[in-house]
Image (cartoon, rainbow, N blue to C red; front, side, top):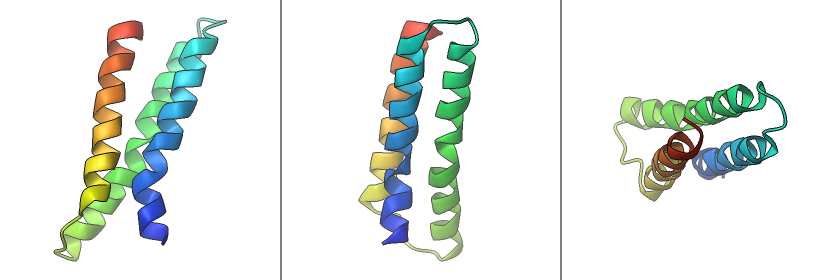
Length: 81
């Protein structure tokens, strides 16, 4: 159960970063949004490391976690880079 939630955690970080990019009321907000987005990689990289050590297939969770981070990172970069 915890493993499944950790794979989905990047969705929360991406959502918060999106809200911060939209708030854009101060020059600091985009920097904070990029930091929140970058922290979203921590659970995914941790789970990838864990599955590598256990020599297991990470499954569809890795595809979702990495996919949402890569796609939204490209969108954020195109709009706020």
